[in-house]
Image (cartoon, rainbow, N blue to C red; front, side, top):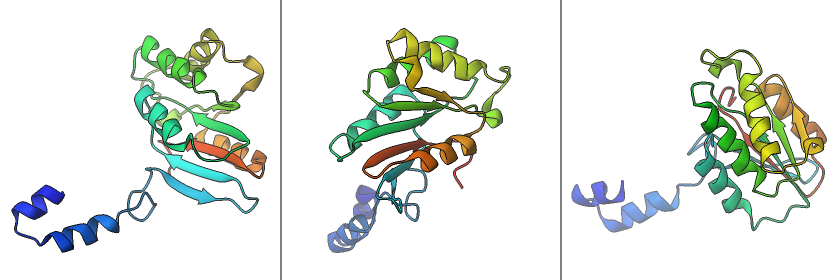
Amino acid sequence: AALLADSLGLPWAAIRGGLSEMHPSAKHSRGRMNKYLLPNGAIALLDFAHNPAGVSRVCQATAHWHAERRTLLLGHAGDRTDDDIRSLGVTVAELGLDQVILKEMTKYQRGRPFGETRELLRQGLLGAGYPADRIIEVNTEREGVAYLLAHARPSDLVLLLVQADVD
């Protein structure tokens, strides 16, 4: 965008000013690194991340944030291969999270039976050594968000990876 503005002859001061106003907020970039301070002092981060690279990047970007516990809401669209879905579970298992909430995304089942995608994510997590007792399963994205927000403690980092119901 900056190079396009420059090629159109806009002054660099205006380009710098425009870029300095860009922040990962719901106003400027809805669903991308939107950070919220919860009333109890926990931090919630909302992002669309939905593949291994995206989830890894969100966790890398927040790795330096102080958090006593890190929890993650995870789901996947059903139109990926079984191995692709399991791979996301493996990636998440390797991130050192304290708890993973697996959600079903009925809007994005895309031909898979209810629960199958969530089960493949679970297989990936368990196959990579993630402890079964740190996995919670919910039936909807809203239910997962509600669960995480209700159980967030002060100093927690709650990673809300949402795709189906951003509002």
